[in-house]
Image 1 (spheres, rainbow over the protein chains, first blue to last red):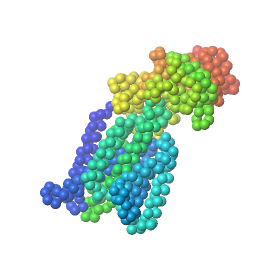
Image 2 (cartoon, rainbow over the protein chains, first blue to last red):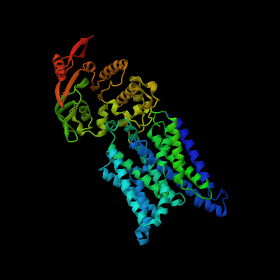
Image 3 (cartoon, rainbow over the protein chains, first blue to last red):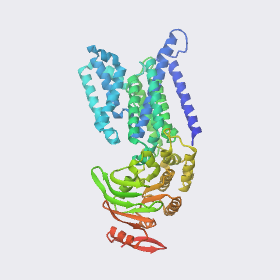
Image 4 (cartoon, rainbow over the protein chains, first blue to last red):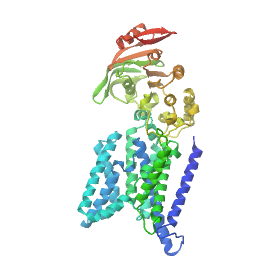
Length: 325
Length: 253
């Protein structure tokens, strides 16, 4: 019904995304540079461009995962890290760092990114197992909380045994975009394409859930199977993002809220806009993180938390009580 | 629709047992009973939502043999209003909400066809909410919301419509409109089954099924004196029936 409005908003968000990627390529902690020749070329195309695109894609993956989590669990406070993926990823990184000195070739092959990805997936899998399946959202959410606490405790043990790892783990926890490269960009682009495509196809199940789970079932939707696929996508998108950028705070929670007013309620539109909103939030935060106190960079997770938090507070104050954001 | 030796379970407990009920095709059947009698559970069992044994057949076809999608096309169900309000929800528009009723007819991409848009428009017009079509559901009053949910039910375009307390939140003019919609649907050959607490409305139906504590208490024509006696017995003689303007009204003693 509101196709023209949708296209206008989509084009607006895409233009904003393009401008931010351009700014991310031209600006940096070492000051602006737009010389396409010599050493600047390396800085622009091998460091800043993959970093900007990578930050955008990681934000988009987290925005998509946050949108899915909030709609699937019918909870505006749900975020992608809810099902144990964050603590799993942290444990994965902690394990690799802790045991790397053993010279195990498998640990070297997996690497920090692989460790974070596998850890995130294992965290979600453990939550599913503890919940006894995926049919009860409440059990799944509670299991996610329990798994997060247990894995968090295991990770604390690593830092207790190896205090020298504290700074590396802290850096992962605050989010880090400085190590993004072209291979990470490629991986996240493929993951985003697959996750978004599947989610958009099955998104009507999320619309139908607004009528209650029973009503959704009577509309002929294979709810259990579709819910499992959505949890799989949630885990994959989160795992890919945290493997590349660490545990960037607040993007998955804030992005769906940032765009909710634009989307008009339909999940198909809401999830596309959540992707774009997540990308814009993370990339703009990254730009601020690397230029605000240049040449010193501050952790991007600190900026996303401050920016997202301020916006959500403003949204809350503007919204009358009883009306959903 | 024929229900034979039906047992319905919530968890390990049987909430309906050994039920044998006939739902006449193309007629309006009211399910009546005190709180906890199993009225809503009967409707949910008929949509395949609850675990059951025994048989439910439509046109001599057991609904257990139908795919989820075919069952959804055949039997549409309206839940109690209190179960369909979603505090988080999303700001889905009235039009998009009613379009959800077309999901059983759509392909795997769930893209609405021209027919889907025509059916949705008709349903919105029929329940008098066409003018609200662009408003988000969360901005509607309880009565407007209920009419939208009824439109969503109509949009399924199934032969059998099950409605659990469809008059909830409706003001008297729209309750009267509901009776007109029922008449139109019956004229189209639809089979209607309603759970109603408003006994005077329930007695407007063609057929009445009375449940008590998970068992069949009585079933029969709404105009049959034996049905009226059974109804008074269902509520332990605490009501009596009087004819008012040609319709039966239940009054407390």
